[in-house]
Image (cartoon, rainbow, N blue to C red; front, side, top):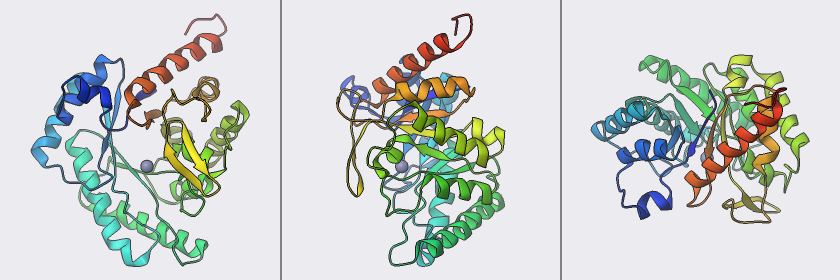
Length: 289
Ligand SMILES: [Zn+2]
């Protein structure tokens, strides 16, 4: 099934008096949503007991949990390969405690290395992480490399798809805002979204392609790519979810779509779900979703 939910805890969650992430799954379900991406970008510091509380709450609420692994992972740098594997392992451990199965991570950056060399290092590092996860018993956890918002970073759509073709039990995290920013406004209309979806369907087996992981928000960018994530209320910034929704319906895709709007991510995830339902109603021959 397709799922929608927020990245981390939004401003309204705290404004309504909630404090702990273990309260998030029930709150998310009450908003009509069913996914939650636990934010560990600044480090996986959560302890087992707290993570299991989130897992119990998510299970009770019918919310699927993923984790965003630390931002400082750099699979493309051989000197950071070992620590990157360990951060991915800790992320896998934490999301397992939470009852989830997706570790979202940034592939890394080439630094001074030629891009092709950095990509080869990244493929080796991610394969090593896969082996380590399996050795530690995390067979059901998927590693989900993300498409990145700056051309200087590893993580073009083709690079992410290559990683997913090369390493078992990976899923692409297609960040449509990042694709838009990296191409200085590349996601202009439904045809641009369909091209992305078709490349993914061509590259991967149907099971993985149909259940890909996605990030969506509006985004500001410069000539160098991503500047910052915006909200759906920030008119004048793309991309538009209404361009993606009919493509998801036409191809029968069931991604987990995480909203990364700044502060309003749960409300904007709800808006995406409504737009998706409207696209379903329009897309079916008899007009019913
Ligand atoms: Zn990310």
